[in-house]
Image (cartoon, rainbow, N blue to C red):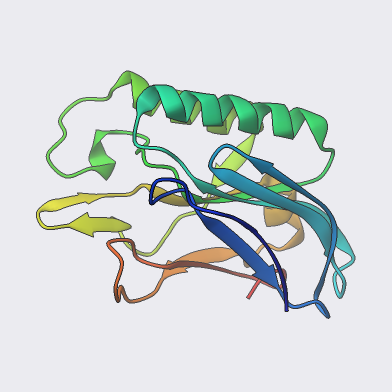
Length: 177
């Protein structure tokens, strides 16, 4: 196994990405504010891509900074992108219990996905985060359409929650298992 990581600051934002070195070869690695990105190649498939993990901040202004960094990252790499993690925002009010209207912050994340030209993979559960009576779908797997075209059986599904208030989300296909 190989890995890259970012340490948490003030109890949040720590990330680790790991891979089996016989399956994936890292070419470059980039770190931003609350995200980490590894560009590399899946060896069996001979498929180069950028895999980025996100742990977005709770504050809308701070999230906008992260969104802008991800836009800059996208402009600087010429590879299919897989963007996954905790985005700390929903796309619309139907993804958060108790909310009855859309907000500017919801518009911001939808604009990010449009700007990056990514597809939001469906997940087999309505909500990916739960704490007491609060629920929402803040965890996502966003992929380039090239990923879906090359690997049409790509899907996302949840696992049982153990210690976290987030459900683990898994992406499965011929590319990632």
